[in-house]
Length: 423
Ligand SMILES: [Zn+2]
Image (tube, rainbow, N blue to C red; front, top):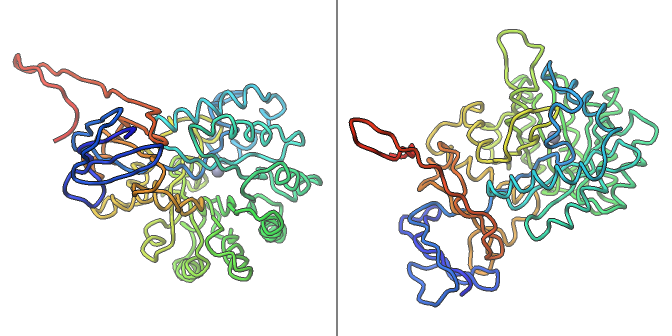
């Protein structure tokens, strides 16, 4: 065997297991594996999960915070404005350097599959070109999907639609849109319809930034669901953000969630950005810009969690940890019930795999590619609570990242004890 992991705590199993890996694949999962191995890792009862997935990131903007200036109002619109000021000065070198660095942060935090958006509204399409190159250069480390994302709208400029088409011809995987950012409701509907037409033509998946506003009149996700049902595109369509749903009246939201379920829509919530960007005009009381995560999950709509920004004009913080995003969502979406902790883990693993249409071959099962992580926690509860580090990140049976958590020796009454925040 290439690698054996002993004493692994797997989800929903009480007894610790061994995982045997050879030629990049999981060959055996058993109480004990009696075979020679080039390398043995003793997981010591730590939680072993399939790798995390980040289904919503903007790799063209990462690590650019403060350049050319910081976002003082904290709003989405000032963020878009600053990004617009930065765009003319972008170079491929800077774009790729920042994107690759952020990918490394995400991988060290356990994410081995990432869906990134690439802004298509710059006529040079430098962002698309750069991220396509990054995808190829980083493929040994991470599976990258790229979305053609019209940040400023498809119909707010003459060339918007042409740039989307060109991006798809260049080889991006997913068609994006931004209906709430078009000038009118009618253009917003046209934005959604156009995305579906392009996706059909290029046989691509769909992931639209939709209703990312506090405006309770922003109702484009219903148009997405209708198009999905009418065209028979169930399972291939994702609605990102849908923060306006937070502010819809309850009767409308109840009806809408039924349609989303019927359309088998994938929903992505982005706790970092949406906790700071939305509802900035509320005054007090202040609502929070999250979609209705618990209600969607309760009605079996697939919901996953994205990181969205890492140190960019929209969100100045972040270190590429989707586990930290799940911890934040626990608070802002009121998901602190014990069984909901397990749902949060689903949302950064299996649910995201489904969203990215990568569920086949994903997971800790015999025959699957040997991609997995060993967390510095013995339970899902502790993984979320501690936002645990990944002791090991393993891809195709190779160790790609190792962490040595800090030791903190506390001296009390002459007794030294390592404080690791665990019971
Ligand atoms: Zn986004």
